[in-house]
Length: 225
Image (cartoon, rainbow, N blue to C red; front, side, top):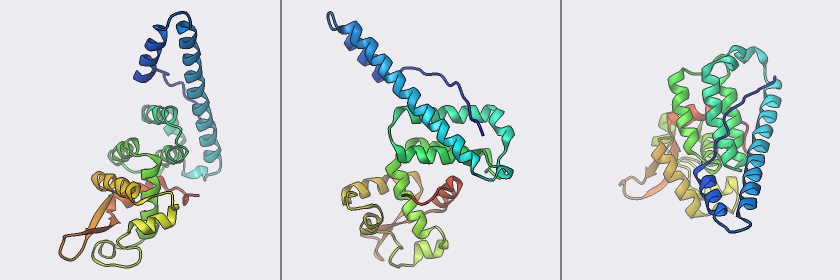
């Protein structure tokens, strides 16, 4: 399936600022400005081409009976692709790109959720990094099949999920501070909830919320590599 789009390629505030600084440099300023503009534009276009190529490949390998082909001609498709485009060209985050691709495919499903739900998922996806999504996927993998009672009122080796278990799933480079920061964000997004001890005094782990489960099921991605 071929996916095409001609989205605008506007300059970012940082690019404008850099160009202004470079232009003020005597003699070489103009040449540097041209070189920077060409480099940034080429990098953006390369990322976008690679994304569209990988998206088309994924679409070719899924059940076409489940895909709403008419969706690719709608305003909603182009509006959502503009959101994806802005993320793809702005960040060299391969993990986030994987989820952006899953998002596009999820929106194109015949059984896609109501538009209101998709808008909620879109807003969550915009503000999350690949690290946020990776951690959320870990807790979804370990708790997503559990009932709400099991996730919030019971305890096991995976409920609530502790930082050490997250590190065990993702690798030792994920230190305590990084995991704590990421899960603090996920709590603020409403995708996971903190668990405390019986006296409600000490936070000691996290459980995925119903919204977190819905969001991850919508993306329907494979387990992280």
